[in-house]
Length: 200
Image 1: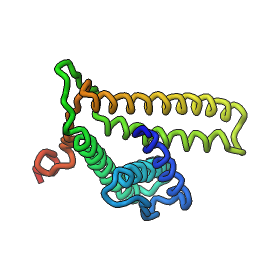
Image 2 (image 1 turned 180 degrees about the vertical axis):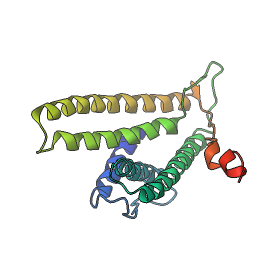
Image 3 (image 1 turned 90 degrees about the vertical axis):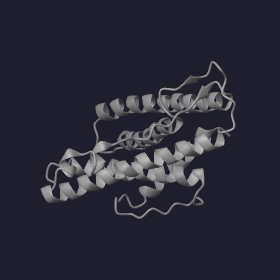
Image 4 (image 1 turned 135 degrees about the vertical axis):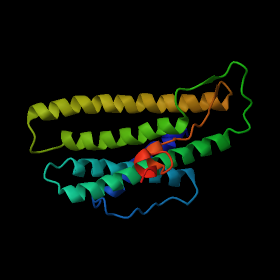
């Protein structure tokens, strides 16, 4: 089984589990063993799914400004949680490939494996919600047709991205590629680097 053959069904499960209640207040019930990569993948997609719905809610033109500010703080925290989790997944990859002998002509990729997995998780969400649009009973035929065309592209993209991730991991395992993890240095979250915070 390739890594994406493991990951994609876990993403689907997380998305389906969320939509049982379809509420951002639903507590996560991660079915996978704590510390396992399956647990981290489920949590990753759960965070992405909740944030997807945060982003829907905050775009309501009738939202109360005070509620919008509270929601913006929750989105900020969710973004930080997402970044932290991507770094955890990259640490997993670094651990399992730590003994690989890197070839002299090995090259680096434009992004780490976990950031590609991040895109795969979000792609699963796009597919889920585009399918919702394709299945709408109250939408015009033109809308359904446009959404079906978009869904076809998303499904093709999922196949291509999955293949690219698996190939990247195979190349890392063979020493043809090597990975570096650059920690996300988000300055606006740090009281020592955000001037609005440190000048208080």
